[in-house]
Structure formats: C-alpha cells, structure tokens
Image 1 (cartoon, rainbow, N blue to C red):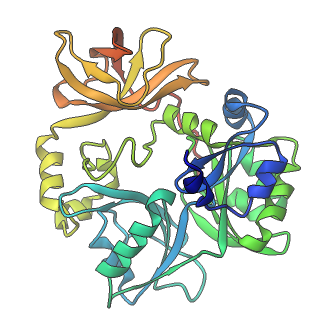
Image 2 (tube, rainbow, N blue to C red):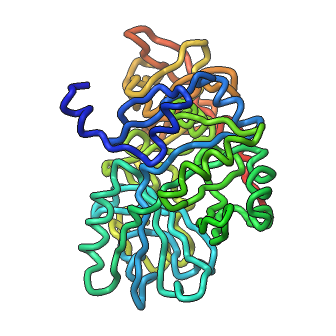
Length: 376
C-alpha cells in the first residue's frame, strides 16, 4: 500500500489497545484495523464459536434520524417494514437505488427510551457510511434530520458465553431478545446495547462513548472466556453463517431477490411498494431473478476465493464466487457466489476454475454452520 494512502488511514478509539495486544494491523475501509492477534485467525474463529470474542467495529457508521414521520420517510429509501418496529426492536434492511440495486445493508433500531419516539438509530457499513448518510440526508431533506454519532465507538461481543459475560456488568442484558436494543449502564458508563451481530452466534453490539471505549473493552477482555478477535476471523465466521459482505456479495449491481434477501421485504411492503426499484424487485420475487446468491461447497480440499469462475458440466460459465475460504468450524472449504438461476438448486454439481484448473463442487444450503441466535 502506498505510504501516502497509509498516512491517510483513520484510527478507531481502540487502536492503541490493539497494538498493545500484539495485533497485526491492516488497512480496511479507510481505517487501520486488526486483522488478527497472536492467537491467530483459526483459533480466534474457534474461540468465538466456543466461548466469546470481542471485536472492534468502531469503524461502522452510527447516526440518529429524527422527524415527525421518520418511519414513512425512511421507508421511501428501504424495503423494510419500519412502521411495524416496536420500541426497542431492530430491523436489518437495505438502502436501495432506483434500479433496485443495493447501496448498503444496515441495521435500523427504534429506541425505547422516552423522548425518542420520532427517532430511528442507524448502523451502516464503514466503507459506505459517508455516501449513505449524505444520500439519506439529501433524499429526506425537509422530512427528517440525520445526526451522525462520531462520539461513539462500537464493540461486538459474540459467542455462546457472551450473555454470561455481559450480564455480569449489565444484568438486564440476559433478558434481551434477539434483535432488540436497550440503553443501560456499564460500570457507570451509559451504553446502547443491541442483541445482534454478524457471526451467526448469540451476542451483542455495544455502542459506547469514545472516551470510555478502552475501559469497557479492557473490562470485557479481563473475563477468562473473552479473547480479542480480528477481521480475519470475523470474515470466516460470517461466511460460515451465510451472511453477506457488502462490496463482495452484494452491491449496486445486485437486487435483494438476486441476493436471496427477499425475507427483508415484509408483506405490507410487498403489497404497497413505494421503495426504490419496487417494480423490478417485486417482479423478481413473483417471477424469479436471472441469477441467485447460493452456497457453494468445493468437493476437494482447495478453497475457492472471490472471482473464481463457476461453470456447468459443459464448460459454460454460469457465475462467479463472491466470498470463499476455509471454514474452521465446518472443517472444510466454503464459498458463496452467484449462478444463473437454473443452476441454483441445492445439490447441483458445478465446476470451479481455480488457478486455471477445474475442481468439482456443488450448490449447498446456507448457512454452512447453524445460526445460534438467542430466541426469547
């Protein structure tokens, strides 16, 4: 990476902590981020599946959107049912362009505290946040006001022991259901909790004031079951869980239907439309999309990385891998990608062209490792 680009990298509030823990730091989404710690990606991945991992996701964008009809306003930009959100609920949805392409995926929360009745809390991807927030502010000008939370860091505590760890500091955390949010105190620091994450495991995301980020992180890391986890394991965890990485598995050239994300569009939104690209997307839901995101299982030991060509049995190109690698919990290579819809059925044999050589594979069900989200 050129020195000039490296000099322009932003830092999260926890950079000194990462360096002190011996992290290998790499550029990611314009930030200097930990890709792994001395434990190594494989052990970090397995530790998160078995116990609890702490991730720094402070590079993500956090903001509040406020207005008298904030639900209806934001529904003009996303296909999710925001009017149906109850106080304290979170919804995963998609920011769409007029062609139905995905500008970004994001989490939208309706805060439960008094005085926030006309507010939605947004968390968007790091690489997209400047564009996302500018797009939302411009499109909803006069209807809603967007305020970025540059004063907040974001931690993710993920894994089967996350609830036991966090409830030591915040007892009410154990009572939260999946995809719910609350404001509470962590050792006298006011934090916003989300029972969500992007590993396929139970866990939380914790929005904490920048000034207290290091103290909160250190308190969690002092727990015997918690290890610091880097971007490398975060990627293999989300891949095994069949979760999309924006810019790899979804982008402005893919629609929700093509991305196998029809489930984000509820019954009312399908009936009413009113979101960007609605005619195209609703037609694809009814009549099928030309391509589909699918799981792909290489039948050998060699992993298939992004941009690997997918062919049918006659050597015709039918698609491309968008994410791929070794799945430590799956104990084998795993991948996701897009294929022509005629080849999307689970069990369909395909051929992967890896370094110029054909390798057998088959279309597989997602996720590769079952989700273990908490259901109250």
